[in-house]
Amino acid sequence: MDKFLIISFFGLLMVAHAVAGKMVHDNIALLGELENLNVEEENEVELFEEPSWTSERGGKVLVNVDSFGAAGDGVSDDTQAFLNAWNTACSTPKSVFLVPAGRHYLVSATRFKGPCADKLVIQIDGTIVAPAEPDNWDPKLARIWLDFSKLNGVLFQGSGVIDGSGSKWWASSCKKNKSNPCRGAPTALTIDSSSAVKVKGLTIQNSQQMNFVISRSESVRIYQVLVSAPEDSPNTDGIHITESTNVVLQDCKIGTGDDCISIVNGSSAIKMKRIFCGPGHGISIGSLGKDNSMGIVTKVVLDTAYLRETANGLRIKTWQGGSGYVRGVRFENVRMEDVSNPIIIDQFYCDSPKACQNQTSAVKISQIMYRNISGTTKSSKAMKFACSDTVPCSDIVLSNVNLEKKDGTVETYCNSAQGIGYGIVHPSADCLTSNDKDAKLAEPTRNEIVHTEL
Ligand SMILES: *[C@@H]1O[C@H](CO)[C@@H](O)[C@H](O)[C@H]1NC(C)=O
Ligand SMILES: *[C@@H]1O[C@H](CO)[C@@H](O)[C@H](O)[C@H]1NC(C)=O
Ligand SMILES: *[C@@H]1O[C@H](CO)[C@@H](O)[C@H](O)[C@H]1NC(C)=O
Ligand SMILES: *[C@@H]1O[C@H](CO)[C@@H](O)[C@H](O)[C@H]1NC(C)=O
Image: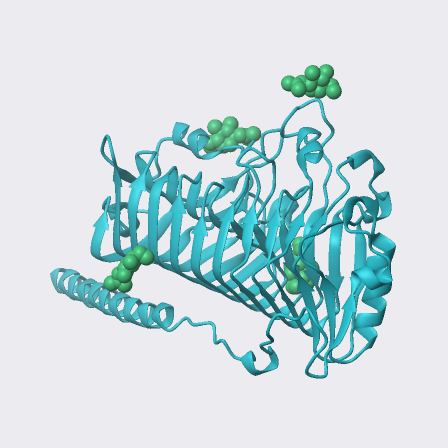
């Protein structure tokens, strides 16, 4: 009997030791994986560089919208002139679709369809404005304004402005006035089902809803793009990426009424570098899992960002009841100033007028690294890992995180979250390492993490 007990005891010790050894090994492997998580800027060769084109030279064919009858007075409807110019530019090799500087072109909801002939440049130097009245919008194009699709190897550039004239849309939003019906509004600029597209230097502003959407595309480069909409304009996400891979956003400055950047289902290999965000709701992965849907996002890197006075900083948001996963994310070199929720994983996201039901399934979140993140928080919960009770978050890595509150103490909140910290981690995140998944927090805290963004 005694002998048996002793053997069992040693057996247990050996198991415990083996588990600890495996954990250390797993952690090192995980760190290596997250450190090496890079989005290759391959395919760069396909994306050609071009000087600004405002006159015919170097074998380029200039297709000026003015030559197709555009008035550019901000009053006359220039939609047909744009379409005619597009058809010519798109079918002519080496052409430049030119929207000249110093003029305002009123253009209604339009589909600019590819595929186009080789080396098309879309040079926007003037301002393109949308009709302001939602009641007159073409109901068949309810969710788009300027929609480009099936492009391959196209360069958008210029110092021009794309202005959605969104104020009446915002006023008619159900988020502004609960007696309004909830309906979708147009996206100002969409690049859909395209590859090898580069966008450089444009300004997109005052969109009816989302400002710039990249959907079902691959190898997209967005450089020096400015996005702006008022802080109180509803759902005006800056740059929204969906079902796209190999996308780089670099040197972009975004201030809106919703997420500066949102990355949703079907997106992988997304790199964001030198991003300025504020005002807005921060840089988000999600939302995912709405209406029990499957959401998958992998390989996302944010390197160097400055977030000022945003509602969230680095956020992953999922609805209860979803499936799929978010895996392999590295946020690094981020400075925050007066951000309400600097680091947040919210698996109880509920952005609907009525309360969301509790559900057991969830989008699995794992391998998320936060490295060199510093600055000030407005709320005392500088870090919140509010994960699903049934599908815990795992392998969260914190390294050199230092968040402070100007007038008070800060803390980390965890629910069903596991991870490791090294270097400075302030506020401390012991709740990630406690390994005590069964020690649930008292129920009332659940209500606190269910929030609605209105
Ligand atoms: C909300 O909309 C209703 C119906 O259109 C209107 O009567 C009311 O004045 C609006 N409220 C606000 C605060 O704008
Ligand atoms: C998620 O993305 C995948 C891959 O693009 C797509 O097949 C699927 O339909 C998307 N699911 C939802 C709910 O949008
Ligand atoms: C940490 O991030 C800040 C803010 O982006 C940056 O200025 C600094 O160089 C980074 N530090 C290291 C050691 O990379
Ligand atoms: C959801 O769960 C919380 C905590 O377990 C509970 O207080 C709340 O009543 C539940 N809500 C619904 C709609 O079942």
